Length: 122
Image 1 (cartoon, rainbow, N blue to C red):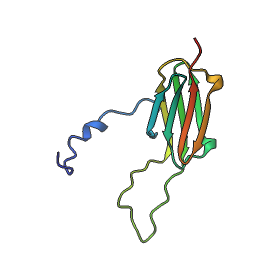
Image 2 (cartoon, rainbow, N blue to C red):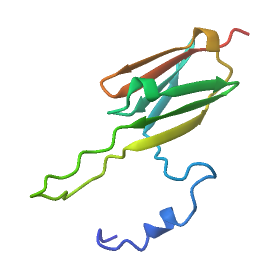
Image 3 (tube, helix red, strand yellow):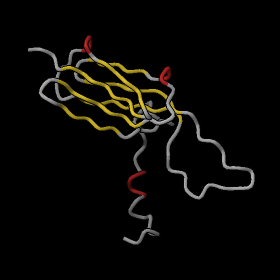
Image 4 (cartoon, helix red, strand yellow):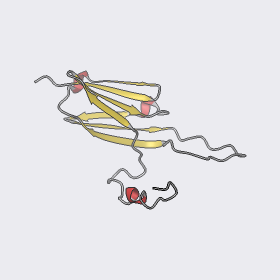
């Protein structure tokens, strides 16, 4: 496909966003498990830790917050490429099983939010 031909890409944007998610962006996430825990890593550079909300309900995890808007281009310049999202975001993840919410931990460092969810004991 020629990179200048966007007709195939328009299909990706033909579907409306899920209800209640208008204006939100979806940060990239890595989700993996070990024998003892489920780990979620969310890439959200520029997020204020106080803006983050993490809710675990059964086998679903909600993460929402906001990142600071990008600075404007200088008065004598213009953006040539602007790909990094900013503003409010939300992710809802299906976990691979039950977790122990009481022992969950979260850490935000270098723009990465890491949530560690120990698996529930049977």
